Each structure stands twice: as structure tokens, then as C-alpha cells.
Image (cartoon, rainbow, N blue to C red; front, side, top):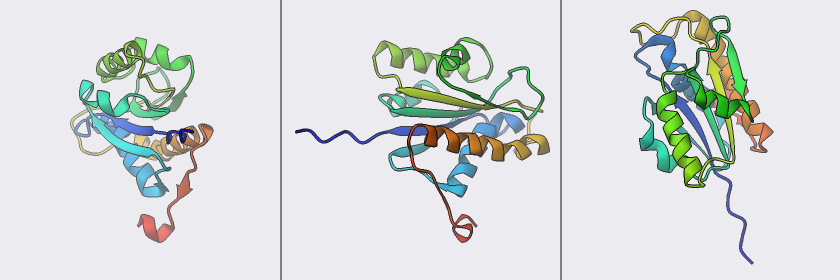
Length: 170
């Protein structure tokens, strides 16, 4: 009898950290890793502005959680969570500067039958994407909400998420 395959998931932060709020995806996964132990079978990836280079890392996953700066017509610093049928719509609409690359990756994974079983997109509406290494104060204040949405996404799919001890996170 074959042993069940271990579950695989990726927490993917995308964005350009040189353009202020554009880097919220990367900053959010850094914060998640600082506050929580990554669940067993989960890898955190800083996707930066990469796309097709990540194809191998994203194929055959049980869960892909993407965190990105998105323009969804919400008030600045709003956090949105897209699941189920909303995710393919996310890849068809231009909500993020990285979607062209991510759309290509997603389409390739679908064509090859290697698409993630489940995808959750956590997006943060930017305030400013001007040249800056820092998030705006409004988006910085939204990062804990994005981190909570990531935790929810993993727990929803049955991954155990354990907080780091206060002394451990420091």
C-alpha cells in the first residue's frame, strides 16, 4: 500500500519593494513568517516581480496563497481575500502589475494539469507606489489584517498554524 503524499503549499509574496506599497505582498509574508511557524509542508517564497521562473515551485501544490498589492476600487489600504471562482477572475482582470506574469504561470499550470488544487489571493489596495523602501503608514497598518487573512487561508485548508512565542518573534 502506498503512503499518502505529504501536502504541499506555497505562501507567495509578490511585489517590488522599491516602490512603496507595491511591496506589501513581500512585506506581509515576512511578517507572517516572523509571527507564525510555517505549517508543515508550506514554503514561503518572495516572488518579487518574478513570474515564469516560479513555475516549478508552484506546480502540483495543494494550496497556493498569493499576497499582492491590488487595485480593486476599494478605499486605500483595504484588504481583500479572493477564493474559489473569484480567483480565475483575478487572473483575467488587471488588478496587479504582476498579473500578466502570474496569469501566464497559472495558464501554463492549467494546461499541464499541474495547477494548485486551491488558490487564495490576499490583496491590499495601495495608497502610493512611488519610489520608496517603506510602505505608507496606512498600508503598514493593514499588514496585520493581511497576515490574519493568510492565517485564515491556511487554517481553512486544514494546515495547523502556530504563533511564535513573543521572545521567539523578537
